[in-house]
Length: 466
Image (cartoon, rainbow, N blue to C red; front, side, top):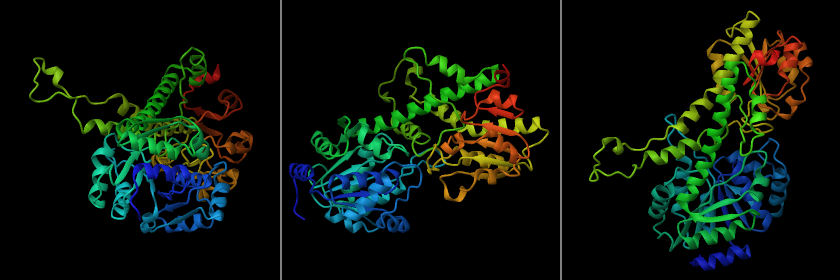
């Protein structure tokens, strides 16, 4: 390959003649690959799961939840020949732009686990050609681009950063159910190792993003991504704690929330049965980890008279929010135990129907599912669990058939089919009229009045009897 300057690469990107590779064909990577192919780029997707590669190359989407337009776009792009998938990293040698969209989970100690990212960097490093632009879209702990990604690519490629190859960070801002819509309409923080690199990255993303592209540096882009999801997590934790307070003092959090949000500049989030997905349960810990590896700026040779001022900063709000949200499935289990006790039953030996196993309504995404946490708790207490989810193959089927013979039902996800579920139909097949609502799907007072043993997150029994 002929070495390219950054200006040459920018021209190829403008002309859509720069071949693009996307490493990782999950929710983000597959959507990004399809979008660049739609615009006219030649795109190769690298994915380690052979069965997923085969499915994609047949024009079939591996994402089975409600994802408007994606299945049709994928089929069209495969048929056009502008998109194909492979497990072979050698396909990267012809590419001028490489996007990395692999998972970046946390381990049992809430520390970053970059196994997939390191695998991708090592796989491409030895094959990296001069004049290539590498962009990481995966969420990272602040400082990771400078301290891990750049050194690893320099070491494995033997190339010089920002001279032989160019590196940037542009975190995704999408969610299941709105992948293509979010890609096109949500602004992006475009972080480059140099200002010139960020400008070329913006040239690339302008092909598919209709919203603002804010040019910045890598550390700012890393912070933007982790801070915005930590913000969501903290706000949800506040709503969940308010819900627990309402239950304790005899209130209804849904009525409280409605009235709170009438006040200017208030936007209380939705409480619920837990927080799941790939981002919100994880990204706050990535943000905190970025702090744990640096000091507060007070050095040993700058001793202060007051020793209290020498203490290093340690985040407390964000970890507290994480604990609140992680505990919500346990709280749902407690509501279920109270409801069973009202009927003279216990969790041990009870057969419980769990409605919804994805973390998000009308999605098949089960990553960090609160339902999984609830199932584990219930089974630990001797309950038998039956799961239904219309979007997950192993849990599909007629919901009433799954409910037949169960002692109680718990709504964990507000899937559209559950919103249309007639409570009386459900009651006709349950052993007991016991329902715990983790997502405010049903009218609690009406069900209590109709004879249901009903409990819900954020609603006290007193509020439902008023």
